[in-house]
Image (cartoon, rainbow, N blue to C red; front, side, top):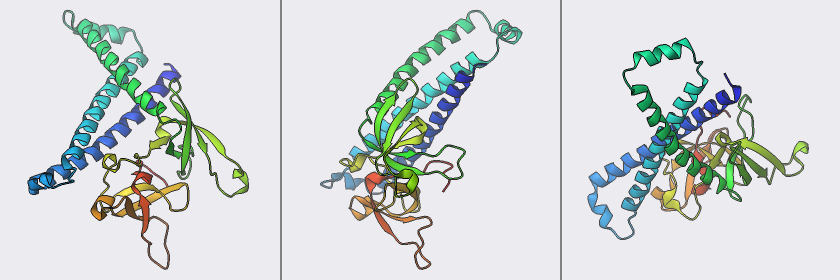
Length: 270
């Protein structure tokens, strides 16, 4: 068993978890739009309504995510086959098969890997395109007591190691953070922000949804609960209540631009 192979398998499993989580969010958005259109179909005829355009974007995202899920799953199957020991057990499996069935399966697997290569290449290109952009980054290791997320600038993305090199341009006031700091982080530690010039492409988090958002006046992200979304208020800001932000026995409501709000990562510790 090769340790690098196992590490690669585990990294792909994290990516698969991320894709499936994203699928859940997209499907939730699609279902909401379906319900809206079924209840008030005349809304699409109103000037300025973007329901159908938004639905098209969501369908496209759902299709891409579905293809990514299938591709990553096929790659992991191939990786597992490469890690499992060969020998009598493998020979027994071959004898159980009939005719050329194993050969046909091998050809199908290679075809799947070819499709996966294109999908993963597209995903890696998307990561590389973040160069120069601000993103949300978890700078603490997985075994840390709590997760710390900051706004950082992408300097470089290495397609081979699948690592981001990022710069924390405003590291804080403490003595240990007297200057800008650079980090090398895996793909799973990075979340891209929605495009600030395209509100329609950003997720529409409903009231009560837990999110990760930039606390006003800082470059740190914290867990928050949505009070109102931008579309309901016809603005570009969310109204949020941040955890541990109590003042006089209650949580103040703070406004945060939609492009500084992302999905709360599963298992977030604060």
